[in-house]
Length: 212
Image (cartoon, rainbow, N blue to C red; front, side, top):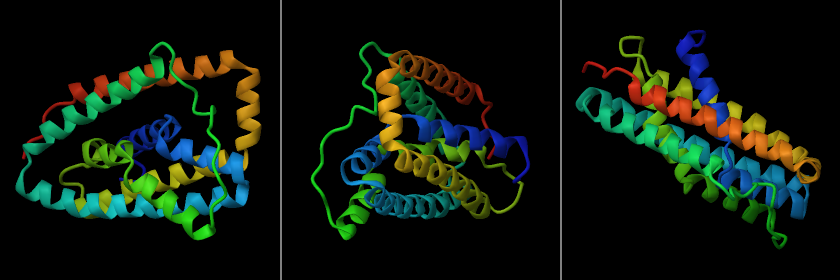
């Protein structure tokens, strides 16, 4: 499955999701700008720990769901499509706020930085919906263990998210300054991102129902 078109499509969806502004991006940007790269890195490790918890919970739960209630995937499919469309609207709506308009934060200890990154991700509805509604659509029945497929997709998502968020932490100040000086670039990015998310939502909604 690692070289299949399904995997590449999932990797693209994971990249879109991490590039869409959400609690993780806002927290890492704000923390890196206010307290420096080291604080951002510690916070990112907490975020990765949250990803691992989401992945294991989803892999175990999806395995049971595939075996017990195949019809539940219709609800997961429509829920995921609706959430992607909502994200598209958040990017395209008039007056949408840039994630680079960060807020001021007080300095925190390394332990608190890690825990805040962890909790921000564990309680992040975007990640929960991604693992429960979007990831299942890329599991191929009959292509091997559902648990192993879930782990492979989950690790793919974690690797992509870590790479993107690492760049955000390392270049937070430069990115914020660059986008502040070029507001048209930021507007163009929002429209492109919103359009692609909407297209992915439509594709998911039109995907044929799987047989149990």
